[in-house]
Image (cartoon, rainbow, N blue to C red; front, side):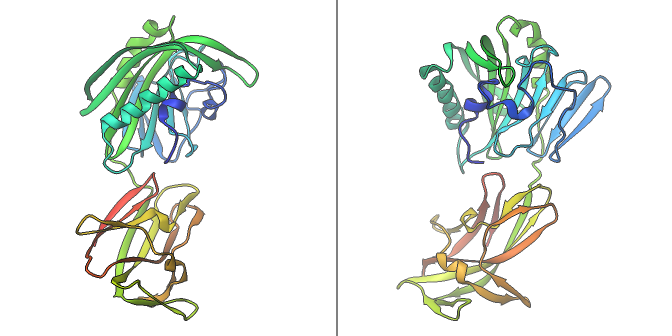
Length: 339
């Protein structure tokens, strides 16, 4: 999920049209459990409801609150909880973002806070001020929390918007190479009124096991100094290099319209820590593997749960290098296969 910083979207709080994707264009139109998601399971306990997401968390909130679940993969925002039936700005939001390998809480939080400051410097936010920044622990993980306020343009409908002084508390936390932003926001006049309820819901946030949308396995089919193509024309490796080729098997576990198989998603790492992208000769590959003719991996669009796809990929690496692992990373799913 290579997206603009979550702050630019999640913190705009219905600014212009960007937050209308989750049913937030009006303060009077959302309904309880308005949108369902294949990646989330709500469960009701007494007067509480627990929302459990395949994106690795659960949160419990009063069953009377209205909820929107955003299934648009282009947005990092997954969940809106509305505290006030008459004002959509009063809400708790959970947004998620896949991080680059090794990205820390400090760099994630700094990037999101800088995005907030950019909105202030360009005039989108007026009278913007960060009131506090603290390091803490959230859901058992190191976290960074800021409280800020400013005047923000709020879009209430397709034709109606106004500048509203708002206040927000946002917590940034990282778990399993995923960044989470948990936000409570409200007009400044409502902030203290709903703060205790918001904190109770936010404090219930728990990390859970992330269910991968896809599964990936790979089998080595050897190394060589040259490869034959599906057109019958062999290609030799550069002097001092060799080809290493793998049969890759991908299954869509539970995702709707998932794109899989792009060879750009696969990186090879050797025992010295060097990382390699696929060789373009991948597209010319064709070989029998366990009685099945496989061709070079290509992107497969709009796959559905249960769909399977397999193909070949080759890397050109130094002859002395020893492959260590193969990583499939499509910015939503990250799977490492030890070789």
